[in-house]
Image (cartoon, rainbow over the protein chains, first blue to last red):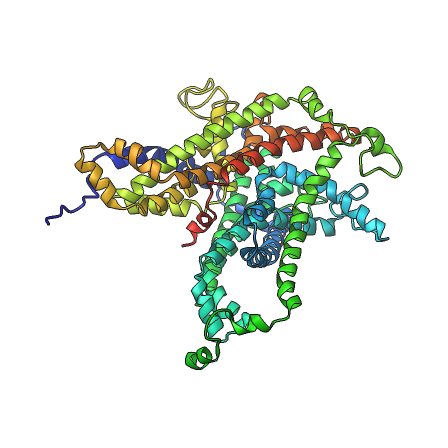
Length: 292
Length: 312
């Protein structure tokens, strides 16, 4: 039977019509902003006036004279690493338990609840729970005779609090990625491992983990990128305080732009943070892939 | 090795190990499992419960010494007060307008672009696909400043001249809230993955029948990717109902355009008063409710495995 070869190029102008919105968007809201941002980082600009070219001086200032900037970088690392190091294993563990439970829809909805909630509500409901005097946690601790810490007003404690809330907020999302990956594992592989007399631990390390490795890499890297750039929660919960203890770089540059109106320096700071995230994501990706 | 093990296994039916395991040991696994899940679930729900209970407290409960946790006389009227005393209706309407517009736009642009990338061959396709994948890596904070000023200096908009000077551009309009989000790279990627899995034969057969390209897309292809559209709708709706940073940045000076999270956040000073805390908690509860309803309605259509489509 003669069969006409399918011609994928036979759409004429149609693909370009379908892609027109994307191309226009990419130009106006991706390429131009990136170029604009890079150009701005070489200027000094308070938007009430006109930008003036200052070369590398914004970068020089941030690197050599701005102690707050370095502290914000450090805070960003603490926040992102705390979030990844505690949050990813927790989601994976939850997914393991979850994957063999009944009533998945119900559990999924419950664990996904924070993801459905706006970040302002998340921040405020935890402010109520963590309140030094009136909060539910310190009241509970008080009932058993313990004095709870000042979760949000003690600089040493505030970062711990925001990391924990971030983990609580995001656990459901990562758990779903992991449980989707776990459900993709063929049951027969487990049966085969059991027949071969593999212990549960051996099955976990030699069968399950290698199979879900792509999901693990995906979750680790996306969580890291999220953690390094996410500042809405911190803005609404602590505003970067107390005394700068939770001031992360993305928040620092945001405030520099829209409160101090230093657009040039803020753009430079954002680009530095982006470069750090890019380099570390690639290194992370290589390291996680390399062990195969 | 397998041969030996296999001969040692019971000939048919239930494996030997389970048959000899005492009853309590069989029960303990599920027990631990459900105990853990319930504990976690409790941890997820309690902060919300704390907020709902807090909303019902009267000033008398708050100022009692020691303050009462359980409201003595639950103030259900607080939910009506929220609408009377705060610009809740405006915020609500704005949230709906912005979320629905963005979600509809994202579904349209994602299905169109995803379809083109999956089912046509043309010069530049590989480059555009790389852009779609690569752009997902760029964090949003990088775009806040430049996009703010691109909208501010949009030529001929909002009193601007052709060079973008003189007026306020698109700031202070719904366009400023929606335009930066009309395309979602992730959505294009998701839809492209779905269209790839649809056999080319369908497209070919439709062409032989003389259907035009746009009709094929609308009448044949779109109905086939309904589950993916449901997933994208859900994601977009939830994300943009809750979007906070961008909306706050462009509506700080335009209260008539503020959405629920932004309005509640910017009113924080007004809630300093302990007496007003209940009002704030009730407002937050009202802001959360619509998303939960949408989620419960759509989650039937929503396939968890699509979460991993970025992985494979």
